[in-house]
Length: 82
Image 1: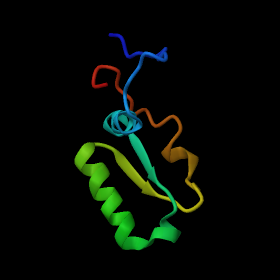
Image 2 (image 1 turned 180 degrees about the vertical axis):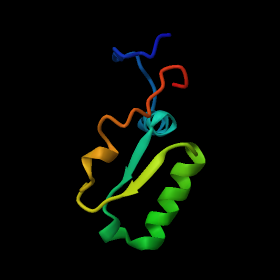
Image 3 (image 1 turned 60 degrees about the vertical axis):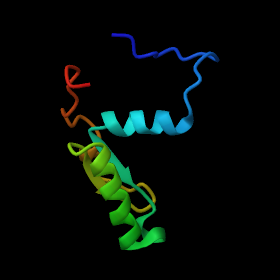
Image 4 (image 1 turned 90 degrees about the vertical axis):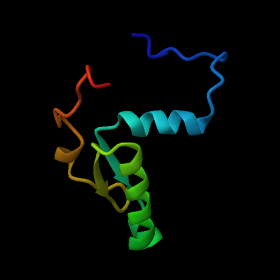
């Protein structure tokens, strides 16, 4: 399986495509700056992420402050599902 790990200048994907790829494959997603955008906007972002990737675990953060147990060694990644 070739995942284009060595993307070169010939790669014409838009940044939006790359972001969607990341969201689709993510096991954990951090929704940051929740103190700035407020609860309603954070909830909208979470709903969007959930629509793209219903299995992702979503954590709201402020200044990217998250307990490391939620992002490191989660054992959530499964190469066969990726």
